[in-house]
Image (cartoon, rainbow, N blue to C red; front, side, top):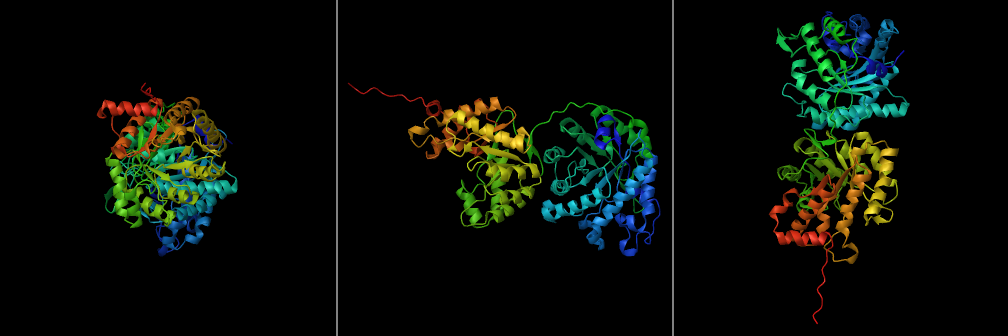
Length: 606
């Protein structure tokens, strides 16, 4: 029989409709659920009343759908704890998968294979709000994945996600199980956009896409919360931006409370008209029904789109980073992307003082100030002698995740600190940094974490000999790192950012007089040889040791020429960078001569 992914490439895939709506329509009693204490626990019906679950699957299969979902939406131990069933999580997922698989086999034919998707809901906890630790949530999803896969599902569907960090925990748990079991099934991840236009915690759909797209998932989508009309603009964003196939599973309209019961007004014809538009005009390739949809809705949907081939989409995918709330491209016009440098214990006395006094709200205020000053992202470094870096980073990023709108650059040399940080960030972070100072050791520790948690990474042009001084040396190191990061660890080139580094021009050291020129040429060479990667500079390093006014001028002029050379991103104090027209001509020319080493020697008087 063909696989789900091979069929999905050939035709529009139609999922089933609502499980809860169907079960409610069967008039089940507390006895069917196994007693009053379990009344309403749909997931336990696979034990207490499996016939009711079979009825759901049978009716949707008879309606002609391609995929049925297991009755396991709330079968993580996290949810089952509410019923005292947490110890039976594996068993309930296994049974749910076995029932659905048996029913799918009964209806499958060579001409119309049927598949089973393991339904994995959002649980009742929001990790971004501190309801549960990332590792505990990932472990619960890993257990659920094991039960579903060993029960015979064909794919996994992480759906109705309200907190992107919850989605990331689910995917980490799933992929950990894949690695341990040496197995791999297709994975769908689907978020829920509320009527106010964002996920529950305020995440824009574009930010959700940026956060989830780096994972090795096969389909990305949107389901639940609203009807298809309210989803239209969000579906448009996904189909225009996602390089992966799109899944759409709306409710039968926005639920209304009538007589104490949820009522969904959208008819099968109305639902089908909307989804047909998504398929024909926007290129959606996987559709189905969520709350309030019935076998009649699915039958109409199958009749309308079930035999169609997927439409080709013109995708404008923009490599980006994101916070919990918004996405920021890794390349902006005009460049560069500005990364605020002040929330860094190595470079800001104000930040160090706040850290020493554990003034977390003061630190959050600095993060917000970076946004007001024009930064696109914020660099966070908590490495301070005499303090627990991991603990401090945890305190900062737990707050930054929900209280600072900007994407986060994690600045640390310690892999355990980096991993803890990545488990706290709902968006797509950037890790600063890797290098070859100790050979491949640091890359081998950090890059797998970036791959696991969907982060981009900054690489410094440093090897076993130290910081590369000449442009050709910078390129050679960049090539070595590229081969490891992209070749060995399979990260995408656009998630690799090279910092060509620079030495200060303020030391007077003859060896470093060409530091600016070599750095600029290094940027040019890397952009030419590795065009998909991004480039970055910690701009203020060029002026270290000079007085503040001179630093502002030199930094601003150097940044101008770095952008001309192809620089994409810069770590700066955004408010201290001046446009060239605001610098007096003499100061601008002196800075240019210093950068390009245009020394002039006066002839000695006769």
